[in-house]
Structure formats: structure tokens, C-alpha cells
Image (cartoon, rainbow, N blue to C red; front, side):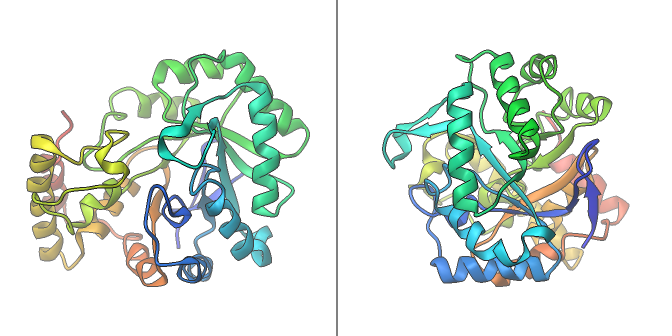
Length: 314
């Protein structure tokens, strides 16, 4: 496994990160069951993956609980990343609201620490920007948790460039977690250069575009889960069909290179500036092996040129 510094921090993270959204289960994803999820987590550790990213809202606490159980024996060898700022009134997709106030963050961290079975969170991230709470209040709350030792470092997720600039005036953070993949390259023009200039490490989520870049879906695929809600990504309509055309070309390039479409897609993310780790969700231990094969190589120059042509930033 390859390890990289996360921004200007002292955290050395594995190039492949375990994205634990999927193992949280309902209402977002179907899983293969907790035993399979636990086995995948342990397999990840054995394979050298040390970065595990979760959030309270993933399965409404279930994802954090699974990580706490699976990783307790190796707690000092892994980096636990969780989040704050999303609350729910009941366990349903439509009941989730944004709240990054001081009171909410201070309450949320206690729940996460308990579910994770730990006394500190290595990277604590604001899940989505809360426009109704001043950035100063949010950052001061995080700085307070850092001083108390409940979190080691903090970062932001899904923030725009202007929101990051505003936040940085009130507290130094070390990581940005954005959606970043071959089909979603919007951060490259301004966000990536700013992150490089300010020592911010990128934790790329949705490296496989929620499965689309694996090549397992087609134009006739109809999603009935959260992907049909228009939250993130493009999973329906003409834009989705155009993306499938691109993925078919990706699969052909990958096959000619002796790789899978998923391996080429994740490898591409890992070769981009400022990216410290690419989060990949897995359902079982078998998928860990495929993810590992995305690390430690580069495609032939003509293949890389073709990739950037097919998936040119718009």
C-alpha cells in the first residue's frame, strides 16, 4: 500500500481509503449483511488500508458502530474520520437536515465517539455547509473540540471555494472531501489550486461515481434508491446516457490495458494533484483486492491521453 501525507498535517493516510457509507445500509444502500461488512473491514486492515471514513448519518449510526467493533483491536494503527453537521428527526432520507451550530457539533461528537468506541476522532469533517450558521461559530466549535483532545484534526466536505475561504479565516483546517472522479471534475479549475497553495489535502469521495464507473450499469438501468433523488451525481436522463457512453469507452481502454474499468478510474483519481486518498466503498472482502490493484502504476501515455479526451472537463 502507498501512504501519503494528508495536507500539511501529521496524518499519513493510505492511498485507498475505506468509504464506509455503503456498509451503513438503509435507507441509502443494501448490504450483504453485517458479517460481510465486518470481514471487509478486517480485510482492509490486513491489506494496509489505514484510513476509514464514516459519518453519523450513514445508516443513522450503524456505520460508525461497525467500524468501532471491527477496528477496536487495531485502533492505534488506523485513522478514523467521521463527520458532523447532518441531523435527523427520524430514520428516513427526507428527515435529514443541516446543522453545523456549536451546540449540534458538541452533541454530535459525543455520539460518534461512543459509537466508534474511541476517545478521539483523527479527522472530523463538516459534512455539508450550513448556510444558516456563521462559519465562525462552526470553526470555533471544532477548535474547541481539538483543544479538548476529542478530535485531532478537522476538515470540510462539499464546500465551495468561497465557503472554504470564509471558514479558513476562522480556523485552520487540513482536508477537503469533495466528490471527485472522471465524471465529476468541477474542482479542478479553482479548488484544487487553492488546496495546493494552502496545504489542504483532498479526500476524494465517489471515486467510482457511486458504481457507474465500474461499468456494471447500462443506459436501461433505473435506480430506485437515493440515486434517483438528485442529491449528488447524474443517474438519469440524457446526461446519464452520455456518461454511460463514456464508461463504455473507459471499459474498452481498461481491457486493452489488462485492467478493470474500476481500477483505471480509481488510479486516475490517485494521480491528480492534492489528492491524498481515494475513498472506495466495498460490500465484501473480495472487492478489497480489486481496489488494491488501482495503486502503484500509471497507464501508458496514449491511454492517459485518451482518458482525458473522453472525460474532458466541461
